[in-house]
Image (cartoon, rainbow, N blue to C red; front, side, top):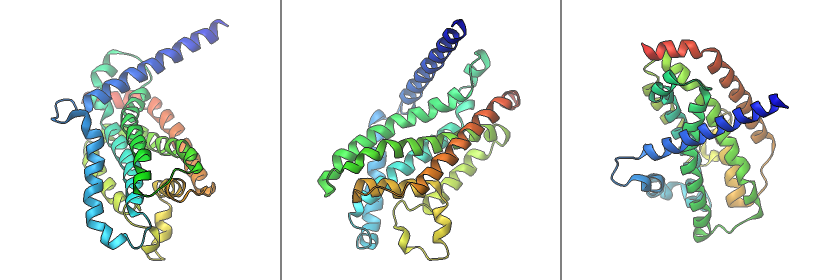
Length: 263
């Protein structure tokens, strides 16, 4: 009984710490900018407007309701890109806290992902309110959306656990990751449909886990269809294994990472 009580107290402390750090990270992200919190909605809106104007003439006749198709792709992709990029430098940004307080270091990574998740959930709410105005009626399949959000969060968290470890070892990783995510953006069907890709290259794009999540999300939100459970289940399973492995590796290499951060 005493052991259970101590465990519960420790978990409550860790969850409280995670929430406080996520709130702080969220508030500091846009502090000092002219538009501040409004960038949470303006950034994806501006990106959507530019891509829509550029590609609607090429893709509009290939994809029914191209506006909704593009917007869903952008929101899910931006969450993956922002959460992983922010997590990459999370241990460096929080070094003073790491040096002075003892707690599981993965909480820092989780708080960074959670801060981006706050914005993502707000964007999803705006998306659901916006879809009926562009011809997409609410469907019962929309109830599957929380599961797909959970899938992209789990995938992003799993990747994010490894990035700060590698960033401590290789200081150029932040620039390398920028290039890699830019490349991934173009090999993920964010603004184009899969069927325009050649038969030789298309199977390679299906190996991208973000692609599988986008396909399932668009099916649920636009077509009202229940996605094939196979590919999303594989993504969730792989992301879960990546997540567990990331926690284990971060804990085992904690001392080495700290030494690298002090250099």
